[in-house]
Image (cartoon, rainbow, N blue to C red; front, side):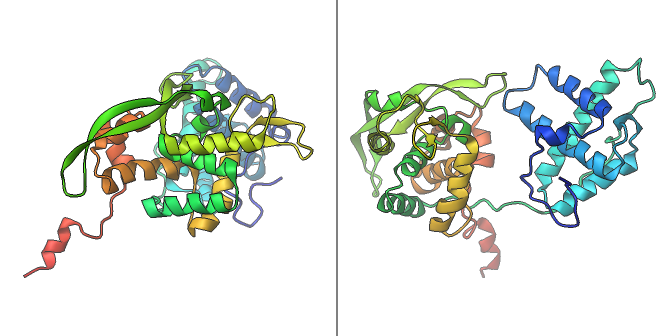
Amino acid sequence: MRLLDGKIADRSVEITDEEWQTVNEFNREMVEDYLDNQADLSVKTLPAYKSGLRIFFIWVRDNLKDKNFTDIKKKEFQKYLNWLTKRGFSDSGIKFKKSAVSTFCNYVMMMYEEEYPTFRNFTIGLKVVQTGYVHEKVPLTPDEYINLCQELEKREEWQMLAYLTFSYSTGCRRAEARQLLKEVIDYSANEKKIKVLDEDGHEYETISKQYLTHTIRCKGASLVGKPRKLKFGDDAMQWLKKWIEVRGEDDCPYMFVIKSKDGKEVRQVSESTFNNWCQGLFTQIVGRRVHPHLFRESRATNLVVFQHKAPEVAQKLLGHNQVTTTLDHYIIRNDENDESDEAFTD
């Protein structure tokens, strides 16, 4: 397989172990040594660095005659960045792949100074061209979310509906959703009296009913992530129970699963399964691009923009340490009526 064959390649391409074995042995062994000694990288980050380095060295194989990385020049690495740009990577994707190679070079300079005293990081000083290729963030409105749920119910896509409502209710990531155990359907609800405002601004008391999951490893600075118990509502519990009822008895402890064609093997889904649901049926129903992280952004946005909750409510639900993270990256406001409108009044 060649990464560059005259056409723009699929941005999601992954290098297989078999393909990786065709790379120059020196480059391959140095990459493996680097990855084996990255104790400070989380279990989620390490595979991303591995993927980025593999893509680079396959490119080196195809475009620089598989030369040793210690002989690569700055201008040659610039060609690699140009190739990424033409291939259709986003700005952030290119920056990450540059960073993966850069940290690898720094590691070699520090750990192999005696063996390669003249080697220098060939990525230093090179800037990533701003391609402007970004996906516009357009969260699901409350009406769009309800319509998506209703359509999945109509089609009797019970597992997809359970995943959608759980992900939206908790605001969790796809890696967190796949850890959910089916035992949660037996958990008891927590009921609390809370005070809320009606449409006229009058305060009244109501019952808040929610559930807590078992401990789930969420994104965090440590190697194993941040352990949290996710909070979700009665609507999600309803569809989780429906899915387990339809699924029937099996030995797999996880909530979201895939089955073999004969139905005998049931195993935990991969994150790519959620991607496929979103890129396929969910996108078809909504009429625009849907991806797993969109539910997290939509939940935060709808809490603050449509339900007029304090940003701190979304912050706590999503598990951010700082409310600024929630505000800067997850609350997507409508700019149709911003303050600059006043510049066009008499």
